Image (cartoon, rainbow, N blue to C red):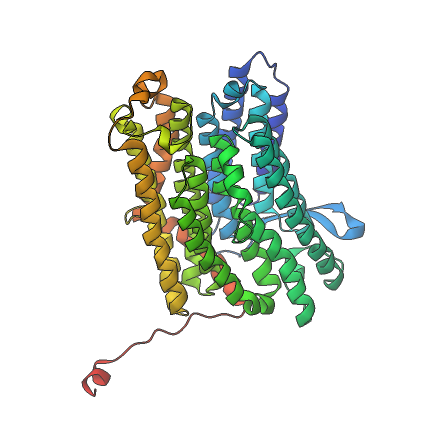
Length: 511
């Protein structure tokens, strides 16, 4: 089974599904939804089989495929997956079917083509899989840029208030970042012997000055995509305007391309530059944790609030990456997965609330838990998971990041810990203002607020809740996959974990 071309099939399958869905008659919206959902389940099944076939103790990169594309430029369709890429591919495979189910009526409310909406979701899945599976730098860049197109239309055509402004801002920010990366990709091709193959480029010696400039070109693109402070301003607008399902994929998966790119390209290809820029990257991450959390506290729009919380979470991921310890690095990758699950759930639940109320403003709610108690309970759970409550999956990843950072940089870990306190403030304040307290009389006049979770919505949230709880108590199946890839990345940059400081009983007695 390990010889099966999983990565190329997984990349192409959603695109084929998108073509099938797009060609369906517009007057058959239910058929388009069913075909899109069925196709996404096929991708999920293939992803599970790939997970089973992955050998934890095997080669660093597995399922490698390479097909000629532009031989004169040294460009190939080369795919390969390490443990970091594998967990992100599984996250995509899990989230997309749930997003399709959650978005069952989103396109209808916008009065636009239903088949086109679900076709765009499948195209987005294709590009997301491709960007994580690519082992050719040029191929990665192509997926990195093409990924913008389906999300642009999902926001601009099917979004809510100020959707066109948000879509253009999202596209322009990402496009500018892509131009920085394109310049760096060309420079890397020149100094790397006119090849785009990742493995070949990782063996190239680059002069100090050139390496720093190339690192900066990639890092700026990834910092915008993530987004890190101060490149974050597009996310609240895009997350606030996008349909809830698209927003869940935007924050849950698309933004992880930035942190994944740092781990896959910035650190192994430019190890000396990564170490030189690390203090600056840590500073940006810490500012993002505190600044975004403070802004989240003052938000009155539910989706913008969740978007700001994600900026703070990406700060924790940045701290884990640039601490340069295997514990913090594993925590950062696990954080990428757990954040996708927890924030994906939070966005979908918020979308359900907004669909019922017809408004995303927190001030338009108040006491909603009295009318929709189950939905309010799920919102509370999603909020607790987002603030990394012990027993939920995000706690494990946040704990690993902080412990792994504390061993090498205590001030950074201490400052980052302040973000946990602020997280409790903005999450609990959001829950209190929306579902607790005195019932807003206006809610009793809205038919939607009298309907609690239906069967379809329960099917959407149940797998996410189960994964968050299971990985909160037993993350070993995921960390076992991540650890070897993170250790190999630390080896690439010449970093080893600090030796534990142990005081013996004899030393204690002598004091």
